[in-house]
Image (cartoon, rainbow, N blue to C red):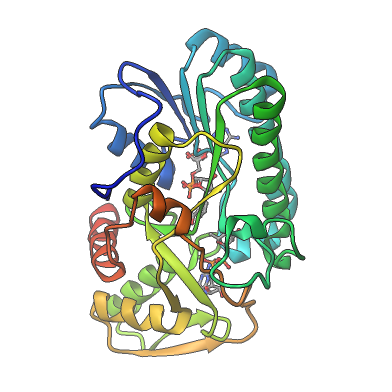
Amino acid sequence: MIDGDTAKPTYDLSGKRVWVAGHRGLVGAALVRRLERESVELLTVGKDELDLRRQQNVENWMRSEKPDVVIMAAAKVGGIQANVTQPADFIYDNLVIETNIVHGARLSGVEKLLLLGSTCIYPKLAPQPIREEFLLTGPLEPTNQWYAVAKIAGIKLAQAYRRQFGCDFISAQPTNLYGPGDNFDLETSHVLPALLRKAHEAKVKGAASVSVWGSGTPLREFLHVDDLADALVFLIETYSDEDPVNVGSGTEITIADLARTILDVVGYRGELVFDGSKSDGTPRKLVDMSKLDAMGWHARIGLKEGLASTYEWFLTASK
Ligand SMILES: NC(=O)C1=CN([C@@H]2O[C@H](COP(=O)(O)OP(=O)(O)OC[C@H]3O[C@@H](n4cnc5c(N)ncnc54)[C@H](OP(=O)(O)O)[C@@H]3O)[C@@H](O)[C@H]2O)C=CC1
Ligand SMILES: C[C@H]1O[C@H](OP(=O)(O)OP(=O)(O)OC[C@H]2O[C@@H](n3cnc4c(=O)[nH]c(N)nc43)[C@H](O)[C@@H]2O)[C@@H](O)[C@@H](O)C1=O
């Protein structure tokens, strides 16, 4: 949602060739939905046709398709358990994908590039709410350090190409996301889709309880992916600087309260059982939204409303 007193557009998207890398993912699909409202020419290519870890193929594709704008929503992504069990994939895939696209963008003359980081780039015990300048001021959360290091490298790549070559490359740091098209695999997903699915299956089977990993005390901030897509289009049109920009909803919730809200949305009346053998991860990560607030953008979709529509989507998709 954009205020009346908003930052003025400095980049006009009309008529531009916009490549959404990772268009089948949670964020990529939301960007495609959002960009369908703009007069742009959308470019997409699946992993089956172009593996973004292959440098020469990426450069060739970008030179031949000549995108004006690139939004980097392609990455190796997963919840806490996937990050712990696949550290090599998380650091390697993300470093290589970012390097190939950022370098390819310079070679093919891309006008504007938006790289997506994550709030896990910030120190595990950063003061809250987390301001953008807290980057690299303390140790990372161990469960996702591999992914965070790759994401920090991506931010630095964008900054370096801006400084050395004058490329208009920017980066945004989204908080924990959810929405239609999320990953509902219980081993690799984030907490919100995992608990929606667990609650739904417990309801269908008449099970007595749902398992919640960890203590339930960690705090997380959740943003609906359609809000994120709107913020990203806003940033492309209005922001041109090397400093990263946080994108959050401004509200946080404990995992235990999230689980209770989900049970309510799903209509399941069983118990929550906390599994202390699973890691809590970072205790709290609420981002400071002063920067985007001052530019006039705010999230619109409340958690309860977003959970209800995501559950509807899940029910339809799993038929
Ligand atoms: N989800 C979240 O909570 C958060 C996400 N982010 C960031 O947002 C961005 C998008 O994440 P999200 O949409 O959730 O992730 P998804 O896993 O839903 O989507 C990732 C996309 O990247 C594509 N992809 C992965 N590897 C390759 C590859 N080697 N070659 C080509 N395509 C590839 C996938 O293709 P395919 O579908 O074919 O596998 C998929 O379309 C990422 O940069 C992520 O770090 C940041 C903060 C939170
Ligand atoms: C977006 C962000 O996402 C990840 O960081 P995370 O926020 O720690 O991830 P998460 O969503 O998996 O867990 C959040 C909390 O929830 C608890 N939890 C309870 N029950 C389940 C459960 O059933 N599944 C999962 N996955 N978590 C559960 C879990 O134990 C933890 O305390 C990284 O990928 C990181 O790199 C990143 O960028």
